[in-house]
Image (cartoon, rainbow, N blue to C red; front, side, top):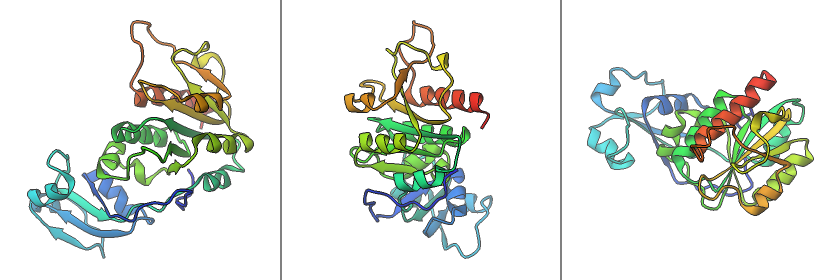
Length: 252
């Protein structure tokens, strides 16, 4: 997995982030790149949660946690105030993978739902991808919702925001990566050919798919072999299948 240096070509905001839920907060507390501000716990959660030494914490009511994370958030009585992670750039990714014979990266074009992005980050960690790349324009901020959907993966894999997706794809291809676009109308199926060893899986939104320039920068397009009765899968499910196909065929 890429080293967590987190530098980026886009400027990140310094606004504090509230993470919530036992698993995301536990992994955030273990992440040395996290600048921790304060841990909030309810009485019941404090009795079961292992509080690290030197971490400032407060015992609060559920209503106080809900005032910062929202009433609909499944916070399990745990919330963590932290600074955003420092950004990580395409240059960092290329430096971290330049000596790798095998490397897997995910690009998401027009995928803006934090739940989908979080789920894709979780699958990316499961199948040993190096990073997830999204356009900066329209991308969700680092939030508790994203972290909860990622189930802690936000601490384990870089989420790279780029100002120009096509230019980033060109940079990856110059360093030996092949960009494989996923399109339900592609002529060939995902399993028709073995995915390249240095592979970028490029996913579009369920409705609009890949933008023209993104599609043109893909080396080739593939589709999932599936029952014609179903037009498409949720983007996070489709991405997980593609990630597994790479993982299975390359024994990473």
